[in-house]
Amino acid sequence: MRGVFILIILSFVTLSGCSQGLQPFDEGIGDSNSGMSGSRTYTFPEEPPKEEMLEQIKNKKNTSPEELVSSVFPLLDVVEGSSSNQEARIYVTQQFTIQELTTSLTDAFPPDKESELKDGKQILIYPEQFISFKESEQDEDAVLIELASDRFVRDNYSPNYFNGFFALWVLDEVLDVDDWGKKRKRICASSGCYGGYSSSKYRPGQAGSLRGSSGRGGGPGTGK
Image (cartoon, rainbow, N blue to C red):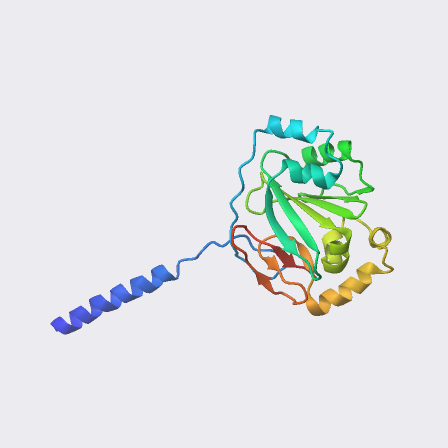
């Protein structure tokens, strides 16, 4: 009888250990486009006081929108594209709203195209450069600023990323590709496309393949 009692105690301890081992590990934020949920959360970099950042934004030494963003806001991550020398750089701020950011940037450098602010997202198009502003899924007070070259957009983005922001004919014109949207949709249907920076890292050419990377909270999800 005593042996049975000890066996019951050991079984309880084992089950308790297993249940602790199955506690959910919060790795981040899922992406609605990826079909996956849960990835690594990111730690936001420290920023200078807002007044100091505003002075940097007004600095006339900035010669381009890209230089302005990179000189003022901390870098969160870099996403590699499907071809060599292609990347999107992700910056972040908890000091500014999307409206404040786009106003400051468009005042300094008027864009070729400017979308409306919709569902916590806005996109500016400059010569050879796309800049997206998006509320972080992790913290609605944080804004992700994504800088991508037109080559990166052309070869990696899903057309769905621009739904409600720009007509496809506008993107055809900007990217200098006839029927870019239709061609990309066919590719996305078979191999997956970049749906914007989110929870897990984008792996070009493989539908639904997401991978994390240390030191940051996530990467692009796939969008089709």
